[in-house]
Length: 202
Image (cartoon, rainbow, N blue to C red):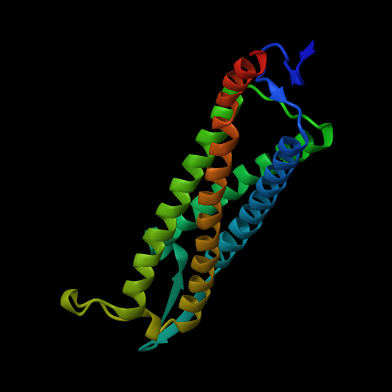
């Protein structure tokens, strides 16, 4: 039943039917879908660039192969971006199904799950980029005080491809932060429904 333009579904959050709210809801959905697609795509690119990066150098007749597993920070970066990309793919499918069906209402527990998942992915992505960036600086500039040599002077191709992967991962982390803000908006706007419902009754 609907009174004063208010639609209520059992176990769901009431939604107030107005043109402005529908436009806002549509724009938020499109923004969420675009961000999730960007995260999924760039996450795969970052993991692939770093995970497939290798270079062999011959040093005093000894061949040494540089690969991402030599640096734990890069392993963390590959794993983190793989997880974030897989999570985003699942969420993209959820968003597409929701938009096709035209579902507007969803329960608060589901909203909390999505919000929590987005927050975790944002923290993991930012932490992975931070760790990889620090390792990249040491590889590029070295650390004379600790007698750590500049690795990138020998493995320039390897470092360049790692840099491209870190740049892609940085875009992923920024997108996850924006997406966590969108999911926070989607969650906490549900708690304004009861207030609007009370005001509508008066």
